[in-house]
Image 1 (cartoon, one colour):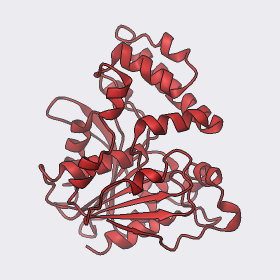
Image 2 (cartoon, rainbow, N blue to C red; image 1 turned 60 degrees about the vertical axis):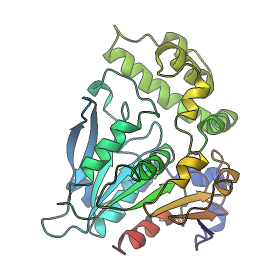
Image 3 (tube, helix red, strand yellow; image 1 turned 90 degrees about the vertical axis):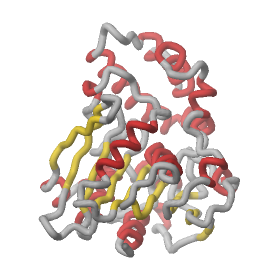
Image 4 (cartoon, helix red, strand yellow; image 1 turned 120 degrees about the vertical axis):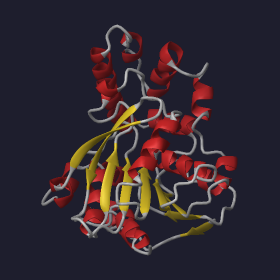
Length: 324
């Protein structure tokens, strides 16, 4: 594993970690001409177990694709999250097909499955990513995930050791959540970040309950005041694991899992991330397949370079994916 600093030097007044974190999802990032969205078409993939996941596919004109890039948003994000739209547009303009996946119960996908979203349900995400990787006539495929999506990306890369995706060339994880228990506590400790996620999760829970009133009553959960309490209630009432601790352990990026990654992978994080402690990354074992890029600044999922609101990791992905 190569640990290195790259040339991300944000303008001075953009260095604060909360500024970076807030700017990542700023609506202005999706402003202006958007050829990726002009080419977009909605798709629903069905897994062998009958799970349906919704995504948005933007292909290049026939014969012009450089491969497909699959983007996975963070928790309570969607295919329409500004950081996903911004990265997708930049890659689309450079000749890549873009597939923006929605995790279960994210975006407008709540009605597709009666069962709830759990971050431990890797099988359905892996299977749909494998299907999406074949969208560009079996040309090269690339995977990029953000925050919780970065956690999924790393677990998918590890699983490829036993179940390869023949055309998956590179995986990028931006601000990936390594220890979900610790990340949850950090969210709960930051009033601004907590308010953001509480609002989005409560809205999602209300939507799911309205669609399946005979199956769910989220009254107890909605009355709670932080993410740990709400997660514990969800696990107790409807979960697949006996305790919240076992649930979190089910999608923690352990040293053993990280060591299994053989697909070329890049992890991008910031030393000042308010949600994911940088020490977690330095504690991971060496892995020659993985480049770890740690920036002094960048916040969570930010890495905004200047007032144009372009992100450093977008430039990195264009350069790295263009090598194939």
